[in-house]
Length: 387
Image (spheres, rainbow, N blue to C red):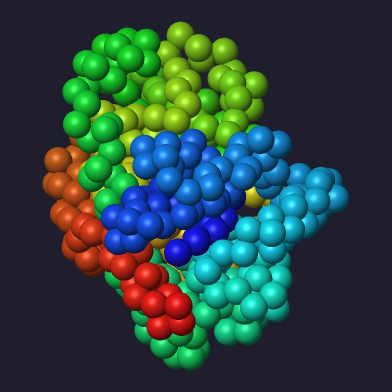
């Protein structure tokens, strides 16, 4: 069968690559054409089967709310190109991975054009913009969800779904970073052999520009303490960004920048300071003690408070339904508070052990390994009802 997959950012590329492996395993005749990135393209090249990459999401990436507004014409041009390519190629199914701003436009088009539409990794309608449920019902034949707390939610909304676990478990467990030694990682990335804290500032312009001043103040303040003078800091930068996006504020002596190394940087860190998002769940699954922070413009935050309905901003805390680790928002995201929390993680053995115990429960709640293959199998079983 012919599968047309659309992924528009780094996390979609990761999950798309694992889904492609599952599809190739379950359907030896699979012909896959996709919008994605290097990870998906690497899987395609392993098999040399199908039509391959149409558009790399990193080429002219539009990331962030203001950029979307400024480059609206460019974005609409990509949407139109995607629609035309789907019509020309005529797949058996269009599989959309997260990326709702783009993919809802494709879902409406593909449904109206008569294609089967699967949506993998649901838009976070349980957090905000619940009106999108109407679109899911109207344009999507089957939703493939990845969090256990989504099961009762989508059941209550009458949205047809499949839940087979979370693909991050597979992505992390199968990553070469989980087998690489600390010394090999440090040598490969030209990092000094020092204990370090991992820093993840997000992927969007607004996130990075807001988080970096706080993170750099934290680095400077912790490094000044005699017992932490030997510590360094490693920023796990988003692969779609450049060094110019990260202002190290004169801390280059002990702050280092690496790209596309999130799992390795987290795995060998003593602790992590993370902007809210998928990275907080990745840290939990890898086993890195963390503190999460988020700050945005005051007006934006006031608007968010009126529309966001969840207790926590971190996926890991939502999964376990309690604070496995601390979250600091807005004015509470300050260097002195982060320093105190990181010191507690490093110095309080009981506190650290309790966090790691919660991590074990989070992993258990996600249902173990094999999710990507199970989702691919479920998609193929669904399609065989029609073809």
